[in-house]
Amino acid sequence: MDAEPLQGGHSGALTVAKSKEDGSILMDGLAPGSYRFYVWKESPGVPQNHGLNQRTKDHYAEIQIGPNSVNGAVLQLAAPYSTYAFRGIVVDSNGQRVEGAFVEAFPLQGCCGGPLPGARSQVDGSVLIEGLIAGRYHFYLSKESAMVPDTGATIYQRAEDSYPEYQVGPGAISAPPVELHLPAPYGGMTLHIHDAGGNTLVPTARIRLEEVAQPQSWTEEGPKPDGSFLVLLPERATKLVITAPGYETWTYPGYLVLQGGTSQSIEVKLKRK
Image (cartoon, rainbow, N blue to C red):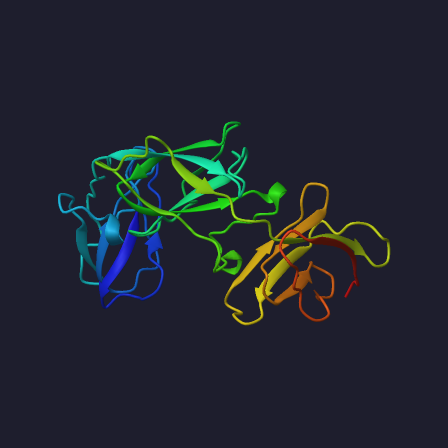
């Protein structure tokens, strides 16, 4: 359940809480004011229903919270939404079908609170994303082994790439499947991060990429199971910073710029504080 302040409440992110086995729910920390409460549960097909996912047939309880109000109510879960499937075929720049690409559907009518719906392409390049509510979606593709990162992240979006937008819902037909083009490879850098004293890997290390021209455009990640990092880079000047608990912060000297399809490998040694 989400609580949205209407007037006299706090601003910023919605307050969220989950119901218990008996259906009861406790939402702490609400400032005095009037709130609208949205009840949702993904498993029966009721997505977060604030914003553009609201339906006129649903009731959204509005309750006054404060010292002189009754801070409790019976809230009703909305009826399940109708959901639809999107079918696509992932191809590369040569028109060859691509297996193992991940396709994410980003709803333009209002984002969800959890992971975006998505699926991987099969051996024949086909991809099926189910459980989508009616609306328009952007579709973002990625395949790390082909050096294509999550193109839904702002730092990885390129002017020359197209991010297809399609309508999903009644009357929107994706048969035959829509053709989705995997973007061209990005530049890649493999990093091995060691302790400067013992030359052992630092499993707690994290890397942060930050676009120089737009510092608000960044991404952060941890190591792979073998302890290494594969950093895919946009073709724009990027700052690389490595942190780990108990170690001094390491910053790449200068800025990183790699052409698409090229790669290099470096070793980093972190000093203990």
